[in-house]
Length: 286
Image 1: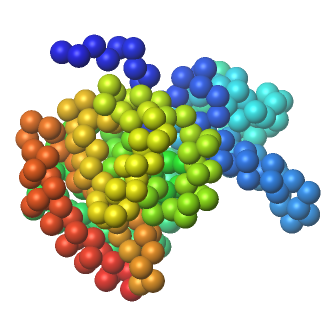
Image 2: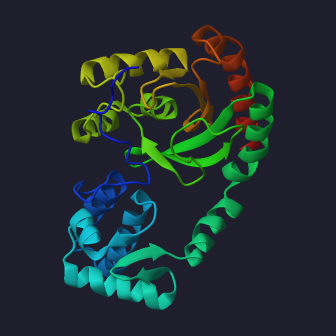
C-alpha cells in the first residue's frame, strides 16, 4: 500500500489551528477590505458573518484564539462577536470553546426551501443515484471552493461526510474543475494566482501549467474526470448544468470506488446518464 502519511489531511470541516484564513474566510476578508469607506457597508455585521464562516472548517468546536487567528480580527472584537452570537442563540459555549447551535439551520433551510435549483435537483439526483448505484451531487462555485447544494448517496464512499453545505477545493475535484473550466480567463487567472495547489494524494495535479491544460480539455469536452486526486480509491466524473442563456450555473457529478467502476464505464454509460440528467435539470430551471 502506498504511504501517504506525508500528505496534508483534507480540511473540509476540519482545520488545524495553524492554518490561517481558510478559503471562505479569506474571500470574505478581501470583500470587507474592499468595501471599507462605503457609508452603507456595516462592518460590524460583516465581522459577525466572518466569525461564523470559521465554523465551516471545524467539526465540533472552535476557540476564541482560533477564530482570531483565522479571521485576523483582534481577540477583543472576536469576544464581542461571539458573546453576541451566544446571547442571540446561534452559538453555544463549552468551557473556552464555542459551537454552532441548531438555530443557524433556519438560515440554510430558508435557502434550500426557496432555491429553484435545490428544489429541482434533489429528486433528479435521487433517481440518478438509484440508476447508477453511485453517489451523485450538485454543486456551485462559491469563492475558491465547491459548495454542495444537493446530494444523493447510496453508500458512503468518502472518508468525510459530504452533504449540502459541504465545501471542497475546486482544483482537485471533478465538479470544481468543471466549474473552473467555465470561468472567464481573467477570473480563472486570479483564482490560480491565489490558490496553492496542495497535494491531496500522490495523484493530485499540483503544477499550474498541467492544471490549465486539463481545464482547457474539460472546456472542450464538456466533462471532467478526477481519478484518485482528492482521495485514494475514489474517482468521479462531472458535467455542467446550464441555464437558459447557456451559462454554466452548476456542476453535476457521480462518484464511485475505483474497484467498482472502470474509467471506461465512467466515461461511457455513466457519462451518458449524467448528461441526460443535467439536460433535464436545465429544463427545470427555465
